[in-house]
Length: 176
Length: 197
Image (cartoon, each protein chain N blue to C red):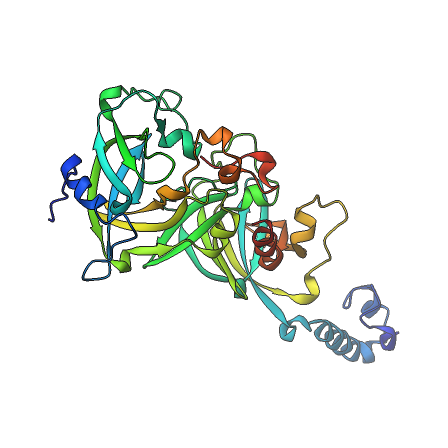
């Protein structure tokens, strides 16, 4: 089985050298940085990730930005030691973005990256969700939302109207 | 007497009418009655529509068969942040990603509890014109051929948004009992959602 490399600051710093745009490898695939929040997996193009470090005060969590429940609300027993701070391009470059471990870098072939289904794309309220990646794990494939760090809202989701505003349906609710 | 026997005559053939008939004409009466009966069996060649009948909570619904590309057992649905409540996520079907809508929420049949109570359910892969999506429903109960003449217009009492999505209502034998089945149309269902985007 292919070993999934863990990323560290040095590795992500190297990926950050290509931060001018998405990097297509020889097989037209893409390196993605996978991370977690309350049991859910998300991905960012590695070219948008400058580094990974310890949590410092002041950064937003990916849960805040996407309107996901806080770990405590979800019944989790999260401690700061299970969180890491991602330095990503866009509005969170300076303060960083809090995510949960494990944080992995993995290569995805072009065939395992999918555009959003049309109906979903039309109804989605988060412009930072760009695509889906199919991750073939041992226990079966999973579909991971691929985010665009440049389109992440600049503050907590509750304050970020352009990214989470309800289009009129669902009585103002959105799925977390 | 016998000549009066016809489809409009409610008198059962072979009982009172025949008993009162001339014995010499009894056979003629019976045969006339049989012809009248046969004349009523016209549904055999009636135009029908294939329907996929399923449950959502306690009620029965159906989609025209030509709008359902495939029926899948309910499996893992991967959530996508930022979706409206009825858009539950995505699934991978042999390398093709489909969005999944929760039909209960779309037709206003969802309860306060967001968790599906109609499990074990199914996912119908729906396709109309240029739109497609999966639809999470309750158990799929049957695939029925329904004569078009049996489809009644949606009753005024049908609540919105169900009424605007309904092609009609049909009474069908399902599970040993005659049940009301609301025949839905995917076209306005999907169009409504696409326009909202």
